Image (tube, rainbow, N blue to C red; front, side, top):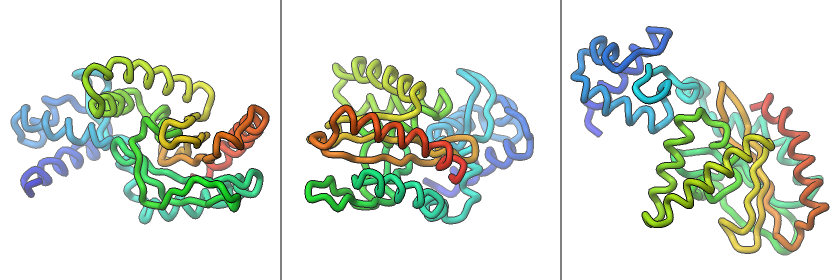
Length: 245
């Protein structure tokens, strides 16, 4: 990316910050003294990255809560420290692997892991990444994002599969994200790794999910009674963890 593009991007962000309200493409182009096609391209990139929101197709643009989160220095470490007690509590209750994940574009990055001490385990290293739609962590976060941001991520996820599979994937994702939002947790079974199931809850901060916590369990240790107990424990912890994040 050239310095000129960066200057245009920050010019738009600064104008939005000063305005205190949503601005149309024409208003932004005029304030920043940019051609409308140039302003549109910059805004599209900022919107795709989640730093600018838009009120519907052709609507006004405004800064997102995600941009505000950048002010918190060392966000990952701050979230890790705040959420660790709840992760340790889940680990003590079930002795299964507990994960903290952060959304990065269409991926979830694992920021912290507490492994089970049981002999059969699912091993993931901090820094590893998975496409958001294949993981409970990713679904828990994306299900609670603003509608326009969620729709863009779904479209980009569908673009990763062959064209003939996209319609079915989109329908399945939209249905699963709606269900995840309604019940308050995400569930994934043997979609990322064979023999492993995950339950995840989102963490909220600054108006949108910053991250999510999941518990990963080998499917042979996940009968209906254990599943019910784990989900109940995570839903009980969720409001506390959300307040801490």
